[in-house]
Image 1: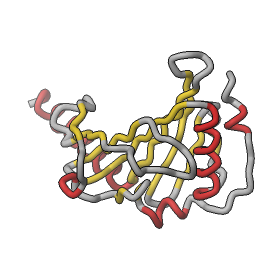
Image 2: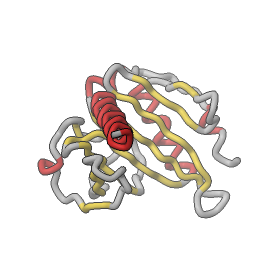
Image 3: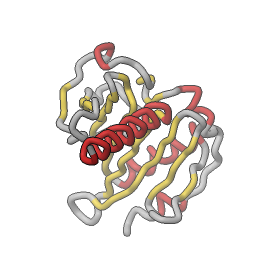
Image 4: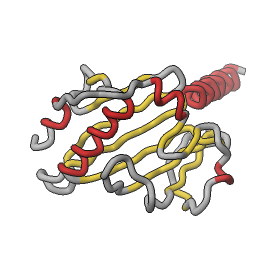
Amino acid sequence: MTFLFLLNSRIYAQGTPATLDEQNGFLGATFEREWNTFQHLTSLNCSPVEGADVSCYTGSIEGLTLGTTTLQTIQYTFYKNSLAAITVTLKGTKNIAAFCQSLQEVYGPGTHSAEAPTEVEWNGERVHMAYNLVQGETKYEPVLRLVVRSKAQMTRYQAAQLEARRATTQQSLD
């Protein structure tokens, strides 16, 4: 694949994954922040599990930058009306290379996934961030998808889902 070189490039990394925890969010959006404190969001269908209290919105990418990159989309995912995850997509080999370099400068080199060779992740105490490279509309246009998650919000969501499954199982036994 044309863009695999991006995953193997190593640059001098100034940051560490602890920066994720210090920011507790991404691109100025802070986790646990209520959805109604964001401006100019457009509702999206994010296909949550019924009754999961999950909502998704897209926001303007205008003014959102990391280094010199151009973002394609940004999605905010809320659990019980509090920000739980941020997903960013961008396209183009040069754009992605610049973005990956900026990520490494801010958060350190990241860890390559053994299961998915096109995935790199950063694991802070409170925040998890990972990106995956996929082929775009043409084989020469890679797409990067970055997901930044609040570990606390994900733990709450998973606990609620487990409790809902237990309740459903108990009801079927009664």
